[in-house]
Image (cartoon, rainbow, N blue to C red; front, side):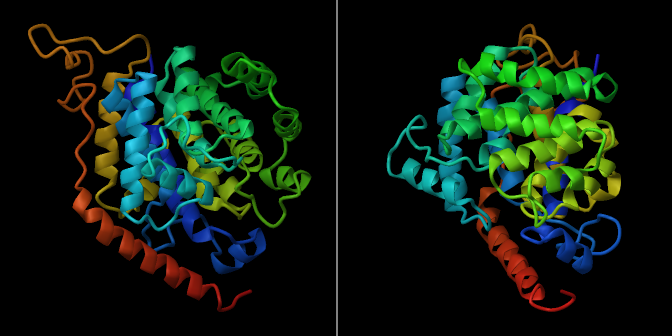
Length: 383
């Protein structure tokens, strides 16, 4: 039996690590990224340190909404909708155009089933690794979570297909571990699994993209990028982002360093591609497999590394590998059995982790200044 907390912490911290490492490379071509940032992959947004962007923030919103709703899909959709409203009030330094429009619709009174906009962007896919890691063996609940998370912001069916592909990969990795992943078999079955969970056939665009991934499993990510005409960087289109992330994950399911090094070298929307890849490999290999210098190098607050670990602990208790959390005899019905996992935090399922929200505005202002400084640095050589 795999350590449930390590799996879910791996999904969260892997997302954070990929996000923070990819952020300085955001929007750069592979050639320019290699010239500006030579050498091994490491934190570069601050000297030896990294910060988190919207990719990790959305994963945290998903985790908090899962806890607040105890996994009930309609309640999850409402909770995530309110958390997206609050997230926008914090003036985040990075927000996609489709997500911005959807959040504004939420503030105008649109419900979570009507707030999404027609877009096939990769926003829903970046929220998917944690959902897959928490879903265990409940297909219906996973499909409902993904539908709610996607349609809050994106209504294009390709966005939901891409997010579901990521969630199924995370669940496969969380269940089987790195030694149990059969990449070719997983890719062959994926279109059928997506069609079964969505209730309609997978689009031809998805099938074509997954076919390219399967054809390049024995070749590096740069070859797949060339086959997909992504030589100048991976775009934010979900069927560019997701195949590239799946390819890196399936080639290196137990090696976060190799997977992220390969995928970040492709440039483009590097923070989101890195976050998805990190979340997948983290859920598969576990938090303990993440390079310590990458995890310890994240210097963010109030969503700190220790805060992310505590969030993972609560999610592990609320969403065990099979069934639901077990009440403690003589205690609140919403508390889990501490004897089952004595290393987890004391709070029970359905209790979101407190966050010092007054710090978000000044933190986001500082984040924006750092990003602007990086943008100005890009005006200088080497070109």
